[in-house]
Image (tube, rainbow, N blue to C red; front, side):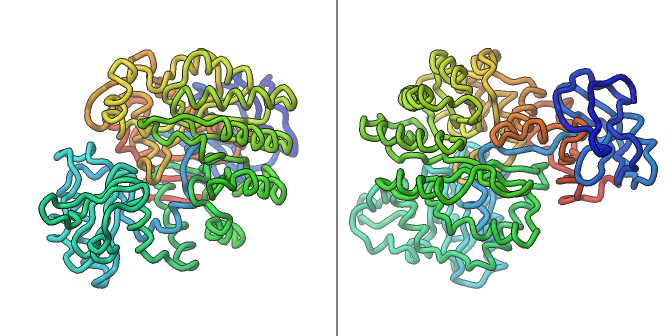
Amino acid sequence: MPGSALSVVDGLARPGSHPELKEGFVAVSTKSAGTVYVNGRIWAGRGLEVPALAVRDGRVLALGEQARELAGAEVVDLRGRRVIPGLIDGHLHAARAGATWSAELHWTGVPDVVAALATIEAAARQRRPGEWIRAIGGWHPCQFAESREPTRAELDAVAPDHPVYVQALYESAVLNTAGIRATGLDGIDGDPPGGRVERDPVTGAATGRIEGMGAFTHCLDAIAPPGPVEQRRSTAAMFADLHASGLTGIVDPGGFGMAPERYEPLFSLWRDRELSMRMRLFLSAVDPGQEYAQLESWLRHAHSRFGDDMLQFLGIGEVVHFGCHDFEGLTGFGISEESAAQLYDISYATAARGWPMNIHAVLDSSIDVILDCWEAVDKLIPLAGLRFSVSHADRVSARNLRRLRALGAGVVLDDHQVFKAAASESVWGRAAMATVPPVADVLAEAIPLAAGTDASRASSYSPWLSLWWLVAGTSLDGVPRRSKEHLLSRERALEAYTEGSAWLSFEESDRGHLRPGARADFAVLSEDYFSVPAERIPAISAELTVVGGRVVHSTGAVG
């Protein structure tokens, strides 16, 4: 072996930081490889590009030309395609989304209302009369050429015999006439708590358009949930779709309503060794007023990083305390002293068990209070090394970034502003949007940076839409708002979506790159992410996706 800093243990080089690794270095002595991928443009991370990759026993064995020479290997011709480490979504509500994935329509990439209606019409032909058709979140009218949502009349025209419910993120939803009847909206007076039912100003009848969580919940409660077998099948189908975009791992932040039983479809796949996506789970409070008791129960009965290489409990988050959750930061919000005191208690208990914590916070005022709590805990139990993190951080100040750095905490970016930028601008002002989020300031403080989507309700599941937003700063309404200094380079954005997200689960030396010894998780892309015009990035998909050396998605384009 050439004079590298790699160490060989049982024939495998263990991962570490090896910036000196160049093409041709090989991390194996005598054993032969299982599979060699050749004739590619393989971005192994940290700027290293090689033409060949050898994989054995689920790990990267060798890089470069010497990988071609390993005996006994199956050879896969990449035919000049770009290869990247498997994408890791640092914030995707997968356990919640998976249960109903197959029953829902997904409008990611749908360009106009006409095409959206066509998916409903096609579903109506395939389903029995009376069955629900729904597209719940992950889309917004700004993505449509018409810049509007479908109307009740349009939904009636394409699916008169099916109740239809289409929800634009968490902003609004529209039902057809059958949906209004099925949810009882035509028989209630006033509005559900926390929601608004739009009504005809003359007749007072429900028009089919609603807003607010209370109204959404009222309607969704009328849709019977699938049974356990279907939830498991649906979850597996979701992972297949996500693999087709190049995802090999997910950090699931928990979220609203994620009681322990909601994880059963995921655990069922895992127990039967049919789980194909690496899952790392944050665990949330479920009921307002019961946050400490519920989270303390998780802390008592589970262990951080308990599991295996496919499924692990990770930490407490994203709903740590309902009184500290500022949603999208577009309405008046403040954290009370009582809520802050309870957040401190939960943070202390989490740190005392050595667990990470991830918390939702959009506004700098929310982050201010959160960091007051964390700094108080840090005086008693050092948080450095526990991987505490803040998700979103759209309005975080330079002062609070310095505080995050001092605590060793990270930031998880997502692309919800690709849909919400116009609404945010109307509240925060045009000038503020130039630094939403202040990416350059995060990088200047050398704060660990992960990236994800916040799918599947608050944003699209597409990692490529998220990467496009990170590098282009343009929302789907066509308006570029974030200043150039706060855009990420393509390489830096990809690092956040791979090694950066692996940092959240203490796995940055083992995943998110293709250095020798790392887990063999990677994707072969339909187009070269590094060279295609920026506007093409959202259309990228995976021709081949590999998790632990095992093919989990293939279009047949390489081989």
